[in-house]
Length: 301
Image (cartoon, rainbow, N blue to C red):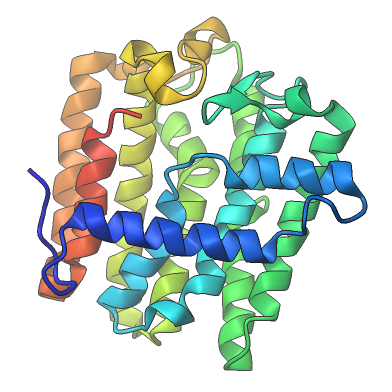
């Protein structure tokens, strides 16, 4: 069943489509033109960002911001910025020195479509562009500083990059459940938490609301990762748009490997309850966030 959420009488699916169109148009505007020098680098950046993608992180920015009372146009910059950082991370994650993958979003990865050096530079440039977008967004300077700090922290050693380093260090050995969760809280969860927090910050949410949303986002990140792990075992590569079975082939610890598929699904149910509990005090305003949480648990790609 597709949820009806408070955005006039629109369905959740229609809201997702509308916001995906919105953020895609904003991304297209912010990226350099492909025919501008250096053309190969710019073409690689656009290849990485403008391919088909779920846009989950921008959707979280919009949903959290709207839940707290922000206008959508005030949320475009953080929505674009977090997606640019995500795209850069995917480029680097797919490199031969990292996961060495050849398929992303149903298309050749950037180092395959272009070359390895161009892929590295494209990732570097996208990361820089993300912070350029935030600093150039206009409005309150203190808010822009807080948005930059939030995204920077989520991207660095206390977030995504730190989690990736833990992932590399753990390849080939069995991690404990605690180690696996810690790794994914950083590697996958940090950007989700940043997306939710940036949306709420744009609405000047109070400390109590920020904490509730952070609790939601932490559960969301783990749920998203567990569902990813399940799909890597039993998903259809054509539907996923990326190579399935990579985790097992690389002897990586995953939730299905440690808990089994049934145990992983039970953990997903627990996380779904955590998300609902975190959002309950926000009432109907959080319906779009809750719908995104439910989608993270049941998605098939």
